Image (cartoon, rainbow, N blue to C red; front, side, top):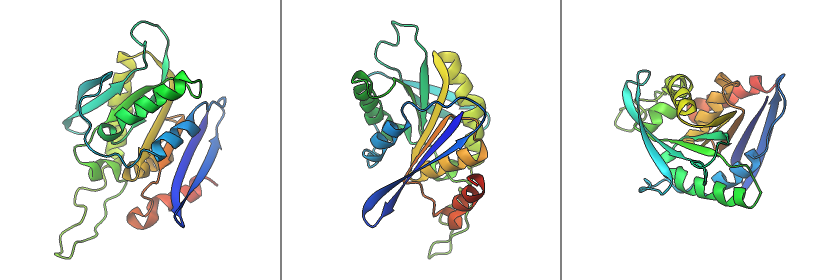
Length: 228
């Protein structure tokens, strides 16, 4: 298996793309991460709550790990119901804001032979900062209150994805063994955290403009050791 991570960072008003590859003993497979970086990068400004989207199924998953019910959005490829093909799965943070345009772009690119078709799983938010931050920070506002009082739930959120969400999706849908995790901004930070914590859980990790400044760049410090 090869782990792909793409960090897209601002650099003097331009965009600089960094790609890191960490090999293990499995065969290399990377048919589409580059295309996914492109579509996520140039559509990452869309964060509004998505209305009902044709072709998207809404699931409600009761999570024992999180102690709450989570809404999951799933977009299957055109013709999924009529066939028996198995598909790689793209898991996305901030799914309610990204699944519509991401799914449509994947469909366009796959129809033109530019990338493989995917099942897209969008994870919606209940407490974005809590779920997507790897550590609890004690930064305070001018009034003395914590700026991010619920931060630091990244490990629990990752456990939810690993032990509850992925098994549920793999029971419901015809999936291949290839998994991708993608996120933007704070979601990108979570992707980096997931890669550093559970590198074998996903085959590709795509972090677009990750919030690497979080907690004095704690993820950057961990990554320096990871990529040695």
